[in-house]
Length: 148
Image 1 (spheres, rainbow, N blue to C red):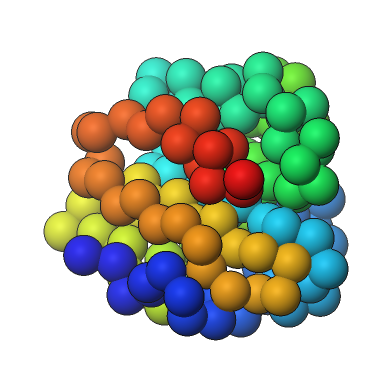
Image 2: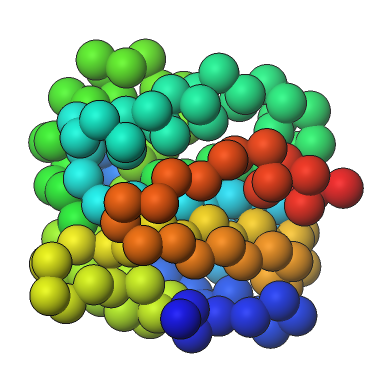
């Protein structure tokens, strides 16, 4: 079960993106943000989900939203994955699972994050949460619908 709930302020964090640049959630206020935790770069299900977000990026942008994928992979692996799949959004490296733990989606037994989608409004409040196990894929259209 996720530690985050609709209506609460999204827990703040800072992670490195694929270019080794810091991304701090609270610095993104003023625009809606969609973060999706996923198990691993290059795995079949994660690739399908990442590419679905890629294919719908313009729909998210039309609602003013920024998308960020988060997994335990390194910045280098994220860069290779992003380049291979032509992903137009940033991937954030949570190598120790600290942020996944903060959001309640760290799967200790597997050493990876479960699939968690969180939609955050421009004021930093959570408006949508979907928490699935590692093998249960999500539909990014639900996050898109949550943006209103």
